[in-house]
Image (cartoon, rainbow, N blue to C red; front, side, top):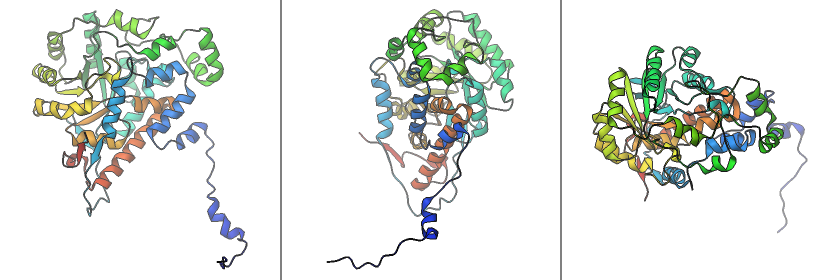
Length: 407
C-alpha cells in the first residue's frame, strides 16, 4: 500500500531542539574527562596518554595474569537480588571504616612510583580523596614524603603503608615519622617476600627512573606532554629512601625481607598505638593469626594479581575469612574492583570496604587530580544507582540476601 502520511519540510524552529548543541568545553583536561563515564573509559584515556611501559606497569599483573582475570570475573559473576516498591529517593553510601565515617565503603590503596604515572603524584590523589571523604594510604615506595603529604591536606584521613625491609631500623623510623605526622592508621603489606614476575615490565625493560634508551626516545615523540611534565617537575625518586637505579624486581630483592614472620608483626603492633591493618591475607588461617597478633583490620588481597599468579581470588575467599575472623577485626577486600556495584557486592559478602588502586590510577593518568576526582565521582554515582535499583536506602543494610556469587 502507498504511504499516505502527510509530509512537510521541517522549519528551523523544529530542527533546533534536535541539534542538542552543547557549550564547548575549552579546557582540554576537562574536555577529555567529560567523555569518561566509567572506569574503563578512564583506562582508555590513560592508555592513550601514557608511555606503554608506564601504562603496563599499572595495568599489568604477574606472569600469565590469570589471577587478575579471575578477580575481575568474580565481580562479573555477582548476581544482585533487588527489592521493589521501596522509597529510594535518597540513599546513604557512607560507611564506618575503623571508627570513622567515610562517604563510600572505599579506601584508596597505596601505590608505589606514583609520580611515574603522572607528575602531580600522591598529593593529587590525597586532595581528591580528602574532597571525596575517603581514606588514602601513602606507600613506602611513594614519591612524596610522609611529612610533605601530611601538609597537603592537614585534615585529610591519611594512612601509611609499610613494607618490612631488611633494614628493620629504617622501617621503624618510617613508622615513627608517620606517627609524628598524624597518620591515623598503619597498613602493613605482608605478601611481598620476593617480587612477583611482572612480565610486562620485564618485556618493556621498565626501570626506575626510566632510562633514555632508543625505545624511550622514540616514545617521547608519541607522548611529549608526559615526558615534558616528568622532566620539568623535579627528579623521579623515592621519598622514603635513597635513590635507586634499576628494575622493580631488583629493588624488591634489595630492600624487602623474605625472613619476616609474625614476630615482626608483633613488634610493629607494640610500636604503633593507633589502628593497624594487615594487607595480603589469602587464607583463613593467616587471617586468624594476624588478628591474634593485634590487627584491627585485614585486607583479603592477592596484591592486584601482581605477586603470585593464580593465588586465591579475594572476592571468593571473602565470606570464609569474614566467618573465620568472627567480628574481631574489620575485613577489607581488594583486586578487581572497577565499578561502584563491585563495592556494593563486596559489602554484601561481608566486607567493611573495598580497596582500589588501578581504578584511581587510571584517573590520575587521564587527568591528574581532576582525573582522580572523576574516578571517585564515577564510583559514587554507580554505588548510589546500584543501591537505588536494589531497593536499599543505606549501604549498611546490604547483606547476603542482596548479593550472591554465581557458580
